[in-house]
Amino acid sequence: MKQYHLGIEATLEIIGGKWKSLIICLLMPGAKRTSELQRNIQGISQKVLIQQLRELEEDGLVRRYVYPQMPPKVEYSLTEYGVTANKIVDVMCTWGKENIKMRQRQGEDIVLLEDKSPEHFEDRKDYY
Image 1 (cartoon, rainbow, N blue to C red):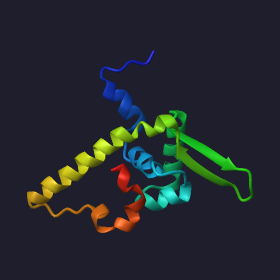
Image 2 (cartoon, rainbow, N blue to C red; image 1 turned 90 degrees about the vertical axis):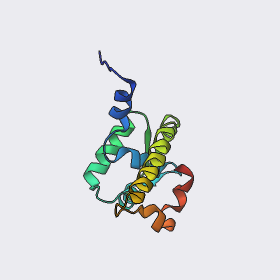
Image 3 (tube, rainbow, N blue to C red; image 1 turned 180 degrees about the horizontal axis):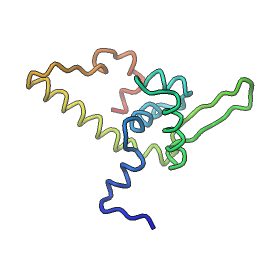
């Protein structure tokens, strides 16, 4: 029997780590191919991306659809359950933006690239 001391442990087990919240955020507007996700997540390898997608799929947050064609085409999208994770991701994004603003006011040389590259984030602006 799996036990948790705090509810946040269960949350972090599913969407914790460096990449899963970003993947959820990128899938909010709709289905994406692996290559689209990799292009939009700087520093993630294809191997790690696929591993993270598989884990999210196993946890019921992501759906994998393989088109019956050659060459194979695979798309990932959020399940209905996965969409509920947006509440958490939205709070994380808001907190992160406020943290960056506070650090800028304290004189830290820090920039939020989202503010510098609106066309890159345009399709996701309603999800932050």
